[in-house]
Structures are given as C-alpha cells and as structure tokens.
Length: 337
Image 1: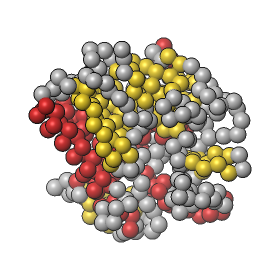
Image 2 (image 1 turned 90 degrees about the horizontal axis):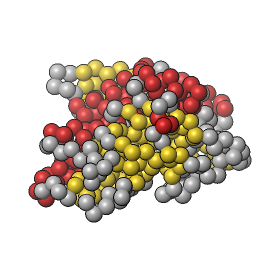
Image 3 (image 1 turned 180 degrees about the horizontal axis):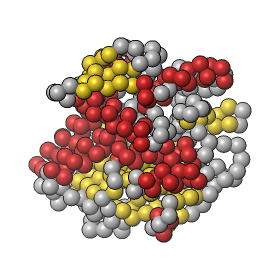
C-alpha cells in the first residue's frame, strides 16, 4: 500500500518509518526516516535536521525580538550587520526575485500594516490610497547586500519603512539544507516537510512516495490530485492559507507586488522543482501569473506546476498531466473569489 502525503498536512508515514514532528517557525516540521536505519544513526539525523530549523527560527523569525531579521527591519534606511545564515537566505530571496522578474518579492512585508490575516485580525480592506502610499516600498532592488570574507554581511533596506518577509522562502531553504545533510550521512529514503514545502527522497517501502495535493476548498485532509514521486521537491500556495472574506470577496496573503493587492489568477498552485527553495519562490510567482502566463516561467526553471482556478478547472504544465490522477476540486463553480 502506498502512503499518501498531503502538500499542506502532516503525513503519517506508516510503521516502516520513524516519523517525528516539531512546532518550529510557526508551522509543523516533520521528518521521516526508515526504521531500517539503525537507531543511533536516526537519532543523530533527527537532531541535525531539526537543528537546521531551530537555527532558522532563531535568526530569521522577524517576530522574535533581537533576531537578525528583526534588527534589519527595525534599521530600515541604514546598514545592519547580519550573520552568514541570514545573508545566504536573503541572497537567495533576491536571486529568486530577479529570476521571476519581481513576482516573488521579499519586501512585500512593507504592506503588513495594511493587509492583516488571521483569527486575531479584524479583516479590514485597506483603501486604495493607503495601498498606493505603501506600494513603492515593495521593491526588492532597493535591498543592498554587502558580503564580508567570513560569510557575514551588511543588509541595507534603502527606503525607511521597507521590510523583509522571508517566510515565503525560508522553509524551502531549510528543507534543502536538511536534504543536503542527510545525503552526506548516506541516507537515501526519507522525507522532510515544513508546512507546505516538502522533499521526498528515494522510496517509501520500496515504492515511490504517493503525494496528494490539497483541495483548496475542501477539508484540510481532502485532495483533488495525486502523483507518485521520488527525489523531488514541491511547494503549494493557496488562497485558503491566510485570508478573510469581506462583501463576498476573498482577500488573501498572496499579494501581487505589481499592484500590492491579492492575486486573482488562481486559487491554488503547486510547483515541482529541483530544490525546495526553487519550488517555494516559483509557486508564489506561478500563483500570481496563473496557468496561462505561468507555464512559460515554470518551464524556464525545468519545473512543473499544477493550478486550480476559480472556475474549478485544473491546469498542469505539459507532460505533468499524464502523471497526475485528478478529480474535480470541491466548492469552486465560478462564483465570487
């Protein structure tokens, strides 16, 4: 029997695997290793794997007072010193912004005072004037990274009020770091998941991993498609993750940096790529573009993608549709987004 993993749920890897989950970076991080790996080797691997995310949580959690990212945001307009891990992630974020033509933009966080999502927020739709006033602060090219010989750097957000939000990349970076560490240990079969970012290595009980894509309007554990994969990374972005409804309209956290308003070309996008980092920034860009314009961008990276649009249709890049088993998503009939 093949295991079904969900892109945005914590999977049960079955009796043949040792699966452990921890709450880190405001999400659930799950790692699974085969029971056939000796216990001492498993324990060492788990310690190293979760340690990667612990370090990320300490330095790249902007909500933690004193974290490097919090200091950078507080010092917008002036150079701020940052340690190696922060410099590496910011450099990757800026590279992702450049490669997607700014569709993935880590400076989107300047809009946080206006766009608030979550049960503790009141779901106020900002005025057009308020958005227009802050939108010029969303500009990744105004981030200056000055590296040093020891791997550290200084980071300058050129415009006061600019903010970096790395949640759209850092989980994928952490997944890739754990995968690299496991490869060095000689591990072949495993999976590493941080929220909606996942890498499946090798096999699951001698068979490919069976991966399900969450239904964007269904229950958390429901899916609309599945695929069998080995040695692959993928990420899902959906308008169901952080949102509020106002006047029958869904306002969500996937902001188009060109307009500074929620993107409307899709309700869910899943990208399969060579690395979890690529998958994570590509899924945001592909979500913003939608299936018609997004196909070209995804193919440029040698990646593949699946979109669900508001009319309930499922779209996939050429070739991928032959590998997918698909059934209609629920609750999408072309009504209000």
